[in-house]
Length: 438
Ligand code: NAP
Image (cartoon, rainbow, N blue to C red):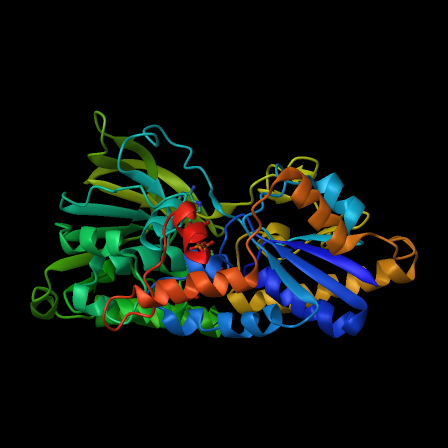
């Protein structure tokens, strides 16, 4: 029997469990650890609450979770409650699927001002992540700036712009819905340090900005490259650029009917955040794109900003005893191998890019590497203690482990508490989750 510990119960974790089942059949036991008492990681706290169809993938993970040889081990902090050397002692393979839950820091003066947030915190706030539930952003000002031109920036801009009616059927948490209902934001500027041809936004997500009840996208036609230049773009990006062109063509009188303007500011690089205690404006430098890179022109200007959310990417949280690549912000690894018997997968391996589905081949790839390492003798004879060993350790330490059956009780309580038409009202603090399972 082989024992595998997967750390992190998001998409990368569950696809790895599924791959391990396919690879090793009945000859494997998989324990999936999570810091939170609830599973699914990014699906629960990262994917936008109004994208329920994307969240539905968790049903596939539930199928894996309910199989006999896979177990959810929630409410356990790997690195402190149990260390990596301890897990490596107990399991044949330890796979880190911890994602990239921390914001890439915005390295400019003023980043510490109040009402400046990274997207991990801001998205965590409206998605009910216990770490960020108390963020309490001030939405009483008129003007928000969202930094970055990726899909997370789109999520943040869209959530800031939606009406309460547009949140029907979503699982946005109550505290965020109430705050957004009272929001005074009328202008949302999305800042991109490069041009329309370098956006990271995908067509479906970008298209949603054109269909909002009280908000319209604003693009200055003068920012667009010659249409003929679109021919060199790969098809997905060309579709996105077509949408940007369509936004630029929206007649002024149509845009004026909407209360909220979502303005695209291209070739605009943040230089500093300005304010006394709280942010009031952002200083931006105009850039030009030279050989694909943003190059400052020296021309600067200010944009009023009562709220700033930087959506410029994420970093993996280091874990004691695991080699870390500081520059890349993820575990140091060679195609998923970190140390003998220690692997990583998903964003913890390759950084924060790709869709949820990208994690599927990743999971299968790491299962293949584990098989290779078993075959070449690197993982020993298969006599590790596995589950019973961890259970003894958890008991000795008094850890309050949350099982998948416990999670189903928490889920039931969240579903019962849902607003009309909503799938659930999430618990936003760990104690409340633990109480619900009791
Ligand atoms: P992303 O796609 O990498 O976009 C990051 C953006 O931040 C880029 O526009 C980048 O500009 C900009 N940026 C980076 N550093 C910057 C700096 N120092 N100053 C100014 N701008 C900076 O990342 P993301 O939006 O966080 O998304 C992460 C992954 O999740 C992506 O693969 C995304 O597609 C996926 N996702 C998907 C969905 C969905 O499918 N619905 C939703 C959310 C996220 P440069 O290009 O110039 O570096």
